[in-house]
Image (cartoon, rainbow over all chains, first blue to last red; front, side, top):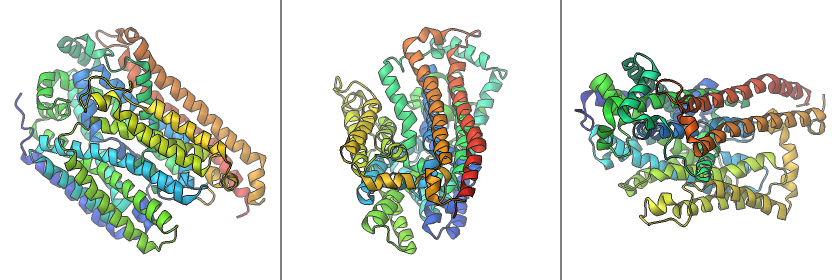
Length: 512
Length: 99
């Protein structure tokens, strides 16, 4: 099949400029409304539940889930679908376990909740380590993905692509703060849902709108194995460990948790999670159709010839069904996806630096509003430049493991202390710090000596640690350390505050 | 009317907190059975999911999509409970606290 992929076509460039122009216009509008920290970090708590639902979906549906899962299904068949289910199940857990307390206790970051009744300085520093580590790993994966994808789709150099992403998203966050970031996420989520829906309908139209006919074509063309579980899940322990990381990692992703503070109250937060789960669930249900469609209509050889990982399955399918014009649209949507996710990550990273470290640790919570906003903007620039540099540094590296690692760190370092601080009266400052540091360092250490890095990246024969994802060990260890250290020595102040905070946690009295 | 201190020690608040966590834990348990059940089914009995239900469609396809749909249904069940039962109790209690 002939493809214009990799050459900058007029339609791709036009759609690209259209999206950038639209999002920058939003930023210009948002910049005029962004003066206080409440506006910069939390969009003035003025986002509605429906808008935040779309924005949460926008933050979560990265290029990895759009291009990556479509590619995985096209090359590996049913196994790609198993992978897709894992990406959704964190959302109900987020709702059941932390939604209301998270919204009611916090101000701008999840560290507000962990540190609420504990000693500020040590807990803020530890939470910032866990939070920033998670965000950095996630950012590296996004930036390297961005460089490679944009190079493949538009034919521009890797470095230029990384700088372009860095510059545009920095404009959003720096000038428009959370208001602009939220609207960029909404625009991106709508474009992505519309694009994938059209793609799905175009595929189904080829098969008389009967999924059964599509599966028959898959079976005839690629063999029945494509519709059966293959090698992805063989070791139950490994599969459950990955499942835990995907499920509880979401409950420790700073850029997702931060979105809870953009809505007025816990009720709106709850509704926004339901909307988000609906959008994301719909997306993961239809994306396998795109993958299977690509494997039949484009062919596995063509897909893997252009990109080994199959990332170009969806764009190639778009071209074969909708021509260059539609390819241009899908390419621009993929680009908008990356921009939006990196913007959300940058805002989360910058808020950990400025709100948690500078304002609450260095300044002991005593900083003028104007100073806080200034520091938030400086942190944004620092984090944005760091993201571009990391993108360059990791060029040509295999970073596929980094999203998995980000989820492992999130569920091991951030989630246990967040949950324990909400539900367990006896939880102490020392317990929180011990739990966060154990989770952070153990998950990173174990993944380095696991087959994911030790064999796949470093090229050794066998790995000292057998599981591909360490969550089952590192998350359990973080909980145990949190328990054990807290039981060693009581913290009466924290216990008393636990009772006092109940009116705020459960009734929302005094919530910001 | 009562003070915040009396409210903290009231039976109503304790009941509310307990009810919230019972609902949360039960729904989380359902989610665990649903998702890890699916994963363990794949790990331990691939033949079951490979069984055909249509000409070529395998049982695994609707089950995979079903896990996603049921996860959303569990989320919706929580919101339905929270928006009706939980929030009305919260409003009652809030009215009783002297500001």
